[in-house]
Length: 399
Image 1: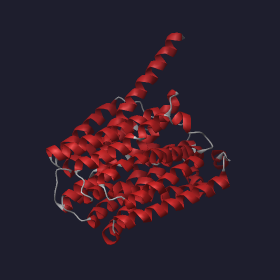
Image 2: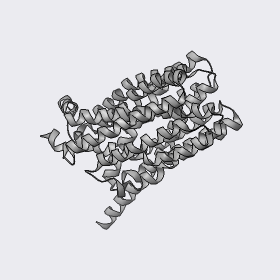
Image 3: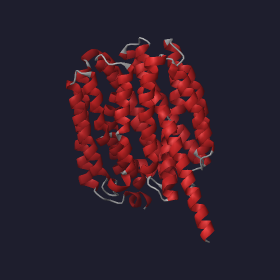
């Protein structure tokens, strides 16, 4: 009996460590795509309106691709095999994207990468959460390595672009993509729920008032975050900063997330998610308001340390809140809905609206606008906490 328990513990530890390695590599790919695609496009001489067009159109692709691959994952009852396929396609597509210079070629490969790479985010988060629960470890102890991968890669890519040229991104992306496939091959699949997948359960989930208001809150908060993600690198360059400074900004932002995720077992309490979301929303308001008045690119870079109180806090609490109200058999799809709003629908609005506002009104007005929108999200989170409080939402849906 003791030997069997020891073997199970060893297997759980090995699978968790392998998943941590995968998180590091996958979020390294996300850093090169989400953070540096706008910088790459700007370096190719594209105006902010065309940058917004490419990224916004990518958001439209994401709207269809994330639910598609999430549904396929739920229906086939496997996350791992879908992830391997998407990673392989992403590695090839990413190489050609960062080796290209023509607007239409850039548009084509960017759309393909949105189709293959972005659906991996909700699948990875679902695998993280379910593996953590199955192995008895905290979600944050796994997700921390994603933040570490994002931070380290952001810093490294900034210097690589400065010393080896902008097209060095192609080989870096392809290389890390191949490593991700190799590591993913050794991952355990997500535990099956044992419940049949029904459209009724998803319809009940989406028709529940608390769910609808929660998703509205996600959207209102996500748009300012996505505008900042899209145009921060461009803003730093316009203020006189270089590619390595952009890398430093994302290193500080992503690096500040590490401790937050690592200690999530301590601060992320069930029933307190909406209050935690309110806390993050308050710092979103402060962060974007200060960004509007900064003219020194170095100071703007240091301001990204406020990420420690915004995205990792907000997103961790949102995932836990979601898992309390989503039906068991639709966890992967529920995670996809969350990611779809945060990275897809909000990304479309952020890219199109942000590109227009940046070029027409200027960076200061743009950041004041998103600061006001974050304030609306703060007020909405207070209202939702007041109405729903600690309600055991999952029991309401299941009844």
